[in-house]
Image (tube, rainbow, N blue to C red):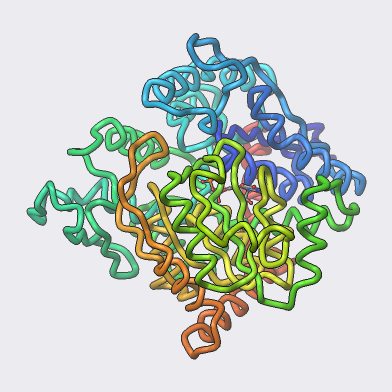
Length: 494
Ligand code: UDP
């Protein structure tokens, strides 16, 4: 007879970093795990819970009505470290280095509630963010396997590991002050080179470099790593991870698409009025005629840069949807002459202020190109929709993701972004409107290059969709992971 333990669903605690780009895929992953019969709890703070609450409610309506276990959000107070503005609980509200340090200090104090959750609830596994390297030891103290998750590509993680471990910046004798010096990353399945100004650099930011090493070491000591990716998207990288890096990996994505498929079964959720208007506007535009421009949740542009984006759109002559955060500069500071006529009345374009329904927009047949900062969630969402990319990385892993898009997958073209800078650093590089228009034309135009890029994007969409279907590579990876964790639980409880 089965023991009581065997009858209980597997219980996984998910513990995402305090940034929307980490929270969103974790909520989608929880929906996916739940659809495979896993009980999921997401541990986070109140303002961060608000970011994912509607996605989790939607998943609970759609998935759990079929008898699957409900997803819980367990909220703990945001640690009080003083001086952060009230309600600021994530990277989104950070506008200075001092704020960043205080946020990281607060985040370290989440160790206590994490520890308490493990003691009180004894989950079978945790999926903990790589940016919480201390979760490796805490989970080990409780005998709980820790799976790390960072929400970026395996390609980016492998590049980063190569950079951190090879000492290439020193060994190659690169001039320290030349941001254009070419850095080669050794030991990867593909030849990867970047500019010095595009990668982490201990001479520029020792703190970031040391933190990268800490994260890498903690992840190496973990039970394994889950990726929001699929085998066909990053050819050779799962093997590289397993053999060259000696790490265990499971690829379970694209989790956003999987979650959308599940949600569609439960009926569409509520959209804001503005979101509805945007989608109805897209309905009136010919297939493939609209360029979508959005830079995720953390990227900010100077007024000078925004002016060039607007000029680029004017020069491209395409229809557009451009997402802008309410904290961005007043239109009077950047709007070039003639631009207002494009958006009023909404003849050729829309500026979407606030939170846009990005996945629905990318999935609309009118959208034919996506100007993106190459955040991994955005990349996967474009891949799932078969939309080619105009790449404009700004910081960190985005430069690696750009390499994957341009050189391995060939589903996009670059605007030529040369330097990495965080949102609190002053960025002097300005990409001009001509480059932006050229990038848009190179993926949406009529020539051979544009057609080839579009064809590859559409092919990849098919692979992304197959990966999460029964018998697909991500479906099987997730099943194997669950089976393994279940077997582990049963062997531990014998
Ligand atoms: N997003 C959205 N609407 C917006 C802005 C962002 O739905 O107006 C979502 C986007 O679809 C993606 C996530 O926010 O899922 C951004 O993650 P990404 O990794 O692309 O960038 P990050 O914000 O982490 O830099």
